[in-house]
Amino acid sequence: MKKDTVYSSPHDHVNAFQFDAQVADVFGNMINRSVPGYALMLDMLGVFTQRYAREKTNCYDLGCSLGASTLKMRHHLPPSCHVVGIDNAPAMVERCRANIARDHSEATVEILEQDAEETVFDNASIVAMNFTLQFIADDKRMPLLTRIADSMIDGGAFIMSEKISFDDDAEQSFMTDLHHEFKKYQGYSDLEIAQKRAALENVLVPNTAELHIERLRRAGFSTARMCIQCLNFATFLAIR
Image 1: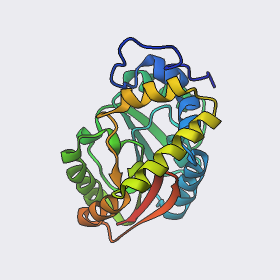
Image 2: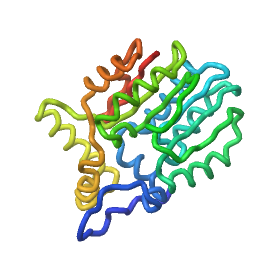
Image 3: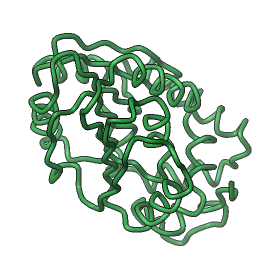
Image 4: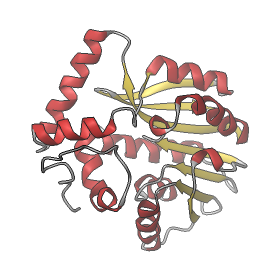
């Protein structure tokens, strides 16, 4: 993987974060070095897919980026399933399609360039949404989750990973500090951490774990729980 150096040089003005070609070129390295527990989250997506996917259903990956989660799902699906990857960033879609083309698993796949809010869901047994809801406007999150739940078969699984926030100020500060220490451990400089944080301000807007679970239950899922937490990143599993 090409090393992430997007914020390694001083910027006179730090623009809002975008999933452009520069980010797409280093995204694999960026997410592995920025998200504690990312590899575990991907592995558990495979576990959940293997457990809950059903023959002749559709499986969706919302915010598929380079296709890591799309492929993880595909490798653990019945051959009769169809996978739909969704991303609104042209640079990500282009690279994702190339990555999918190198894989020869049996389940069919299509990668669509569109917003998740525009996606038509149908006959879904698995829907994955990894670090995507946090980039969607807050007032659009509940309607999207409700549409997802309405599209799913009984017993279908919605798997969502997100950066989370904390109501307690001391806990928020503690987790933020640990996350920064994790990124330093991964080789990022103070400058890189500060500039990326500025780029993500008001672009990535996290919610608390409690709010995520409440929303999932209101959306129509019979159960919703947090299954993994690594510092201020978490994976939620909701069953229709």
